[in-house]
Amino acid sequence: MGSGQTAWESALIQLSNAVRELGLDDGLHELLATPRRALTVSVPLRYDDGHVEVLTGYRVQHNLARGPAKGGVRYHPATDIDEVKALAMWMTWKCALIGIPYGGAKGGVGVDPKLLSRNELERVTRRYASEIIPIIGPEKDIPAPDVGTDEQTMAWMMDTYSVQTGYSVPGVVTGKPVAIGGSEGRGGATSRGVMYSAFSALREASVDYRGCTVAVQGFGKVGGLAAQFLHDAGCSVVAVSDVKGGIYNPRGLNPVALLRHLRGGADSVVGYPGTDTITNDELVELDVDVLVPAALEGVITEENADRVKARFVVEGANGPTTPAADEILEKNGVVVVPDVLANSGGVAVSYFEWVQDLQAYFWTEDEVNDRLKVLMDRAYTDVSGLAAERGVSLRTAAQMIGVGRVAEAHRTRGLYP
Picture 1 (cartoon, rainbow, N blue to C red):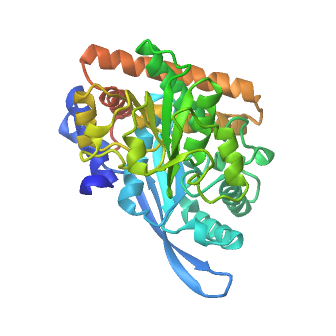
Picture 2: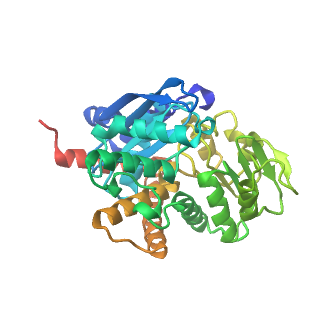
Picture 3: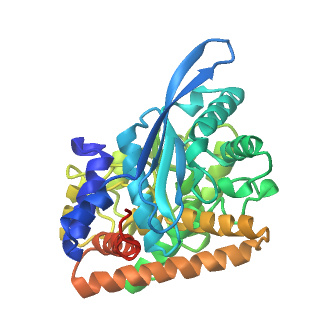
């Protein structure tokens, strides 16, 4: 993360701000700051050439006051317990904020999935799943895809759990293929939610989204489809980037053609015909209406926040803006639609998928998208209303609603014993 601050430190600062605004007592603050369970497991992997390496896996259940734990599993070399704890905490507030009956969890394995063969990925996934089986299940904790994992990963996890249980349990994971109980509309749900959030922010500022300029950092699972949805709706996507760098064309890019270009074997957006090459740092500072950081944590820091020219920052990634950068953006009049609101479309449709699995009755893609829009629009209205009423940023308002609802659940349930 930028400026030496870990994701966990950022998460704790955000929680403290919300606790202060809500006037919660120290005991409740400590309860909300402490993960309920944190499991570290060894994940031995036999490579295709026969040698064995022991990787480290994690699963953190941050809070279970409002329902079973919910959260993604990421495969990334930098994944460690602090990052997983922060992401689990953010999931708790996110689920409470959009009003779905889950607590927050997160998991991961410290590995670079790009260096593994498909068979190696399957072995890592099945071993990791079998190590965390004691604490997961449709009533306990429901994993989903995240950075470095996808619907195939979820299919292997569901199968591993089902084989151990003795019958099929589709509801143990979400974000799985439709063929085995996945939901229509789940694949692009996070990106669609980013679009809905951007439009809510623009509408509130009386800006017509048609023709407004957009830069997307991170042309991956979330950023790639967000760029496409925004483009299809009439926005002008002028810049996108990935880990290798970015491209810029002031007249606009065609995300569909770009995605086709990448599927055709290109390993980066850089070098796409008819575009100027820019760095990821330059993309963040472009003069656009909307900036969508959809890569990893900590890309807008106190070092570069002053140079952000976008009027709206809509967070597709988790934690892309550090607390110090937040203060600078707020001072400069930049509207930040925070991650817990902007990228909650994925967990919303994960919830829809889980509900469909539990009742074994499935909805059409249009039904899923309509329900998603209702959920996202309502959450945005709640947040912007509280922000205006209390004179705080959208992030603080979103945290206050999320934290407040979890605190209320704790107070209502009481403390055992």
